[in-house]
Length: 262
DNA sequence: ATGGTCGTCATACGA
Image 1: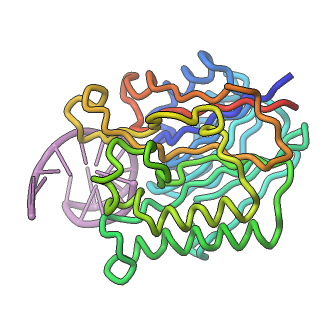
Image 2 (image 1 turned 180 degrees about the vertical axis):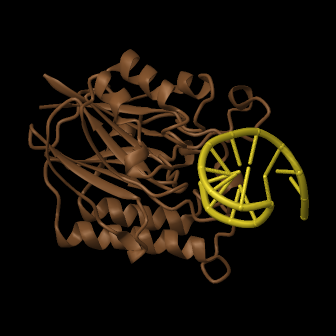
């Protein structure tokens, strides 16, 4: 038996309920983590997901911005969230499943356009958010845990279409990559996607602004699946469903998958 | 160097 995990920045859960349903039907993950739901929790179309077999849902939400949700076929034993940077925004939710594994679902701040915290408070917020993640996982080291989400950072050269051209572009600057590496080191998080796909370009996001996103293929790997070393991923189970970027009324992100042994 | 496209909520702002 294995557990199939999926993470997807959906950019409005209400507008895209039809393609969420399609993903659940086509791919049947055991757990689906959504980011940028952009909806108050009580306006998430939970009946649609329950009818599709995902009756166990925990979410955090606000009107119009941010928002994270965990949809599960398995019973959720416990749930929680942490308010990183004390802003009361909806960027983290966690659930412990009946098999004892904990899943953390994050939506890390995008950080604005200017990669300088003295000129751009959004960039400062992003770096501070990552530092708090590092400290939080250092203070309470997780076990049997999976961390997923839109981390809004593409850390490796092959996580972007042009390493050289993106070195000063928010999402691929050295200071962000360093901050993300510190989060990763805090709990010895393993990058499951790159364990399974160590070579070559891998992307999970393509801008809406490109004329032909697929032909231009100027993507970035912003969405991640990490796990603590005591979790056993199913060899080669990582995938990115690039096709979903071309579905009707798509998100600008594609779903990312990995499977774990029970 | 600039603008290109989305979603939400209100016609600006964040991504």
